[in-house]
Length: 483
Image (cartoon, rainbow, N blue to C red):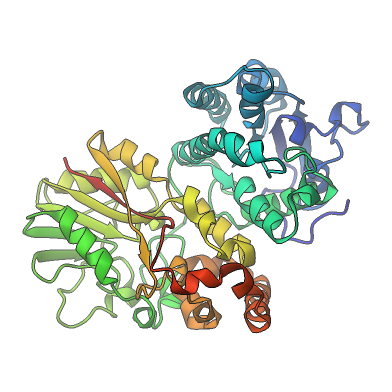
């Protein structure tokens, strides 16, 4: 196996990086003179992490309770700077081969205990999705039903602890769909050489692209370390002074979404719109106050809309209970402190809060995963889970799925589920901020792949039904707190 040809992960040279998990991480490392094993850990140690001290602390057969038992000796004792955790498939497997299940609740509690102890040391956290690449019907159905809630737990814990998520399950299954499951893991669980290489490439790509805790030191849980506001005032990780040019040509309010948002706002008269952008989804029949930190986006607001106030979600310049309702669309993943932003929204709002966002656990439903896996991985890393948002807003919070219409005029990536040719347009990709985090050369390879498959008919062989499918059940949701 050779080291992946990807940018070096953003860990400062000389740091101690510990990989903690089960057999996928172990890979016979205890019989290896240098202790790295023969899998993805070795590939990373000999490539992107070659300047770091890499420790393999995987043990075959481990479940989350085993990690609890040995986290002190096998992780914390190494005084790590970065800890990468991959655990969960044995918690699923033992249910079916030994009738010894681990409930999702027990899995979450045990995992949280491990992370609390590691986080207390100041180490940065990387959480890898547990995965199965089904090679049997049982794995495709029963195992998947058991594992998916655990993957959701990983995303929720990543939000809670400010960790990076490596979407191993999503990307490996997308890769398998284009090749075969057995190419990556002959038994659906234990990676082949190709599988380990794919995992290493993904880990290096995601961690290398992350502007979060790795490389910058510990941050508060749930806070993305995005640095100072950009030149045009953009407050998140994307610079809308650059990518926001001509944004409104591709991102118009979708009427079906407008109706759904209006229904959740109820009879509210005064509405606060945070991260208001160019004004999409602002109701014209209510008294709206708009907040938008990006000058580029404020300048694209139509003349009939109120001017937006230059402020951020985390520090709203309004008195308590100033508004009947509040809303934000495609914005929360840009906030530098999710908890602070949501707390501020609730502070200034008397009634419902309506948030339109994407569920990162559902992003892999899109065919784009087959063509631009790093774009999907980037989106999954940036979006907080709806459950995470709900945990801050309170028990009265509801999650409402939003099916995407075929001719959706709000051009986020999934809007083109049945119109793939549009994503060949650079402007369409520029209006989706995740593309701005991808190396331009890699992005061009993704586009070339899509173009070739469209020209050859390969895309239509797999997805032609989407061209006439009226709606797509993708990642889009409304998170609604009725208060």
